[in-house]
Length: 281
Image (cartoon, rainbow, N blue to C red; front, side, top):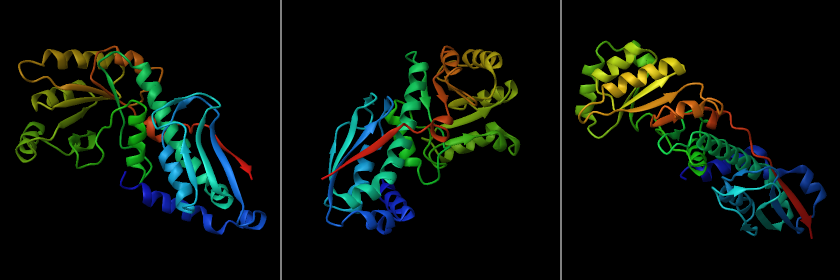
């Protein structure tokens, strides 16, 4: 991932790893150590290679052995990484390595829970752009590790006409036609919050129609309208978004739609509990 090295450099600088007063005062510079990263809870791993690179970035003499790969399901007590090298590098890199690993594994784990809850053979779980600034590549990679699918990476990847765009646009069909002429291979998605907006999206022949915060009863009505209007070569995909959680995702997936997008996977995933234990030699 293109931004990983920069993020590691920034994180190490932020933590002041090369001026750790505590470690410098207590641990001799020549001291060697061994350490292991251990999962305290079950989940799906993500960020193993990044964590390994943290220690190597502090000191190239660090030798890191990967015990579990990204995307692996882990149990409580399983070893993730083994590190051997200068004690200073291990002790000062601990928090930065764990920050990456715990956060990304948390996203992968929560994504996996959504994928499992919605499993019906048709509906896929998509992420959103609700990510920590600068961490989007990593967050979306974590979603893939958890079995989810990436929505657009950035604003230039596809056309997504949202509520505020609709408010400022008079003729949706005309605008969509203009977009198709200019961006011939780009998907066009329209966000809808009511039945009238769905009708406009159908008239404009949007490739994907997003039903945002429409509630179960209204969502069913809108899906029926979309399916009835899907004739000939025009069969838009349906995406449901807004307030979806692990309790509601299953009932929405049963509606047979193609997509469910979930913001909380990247903006509210709890960190997976992983710790580092050292053996000073």
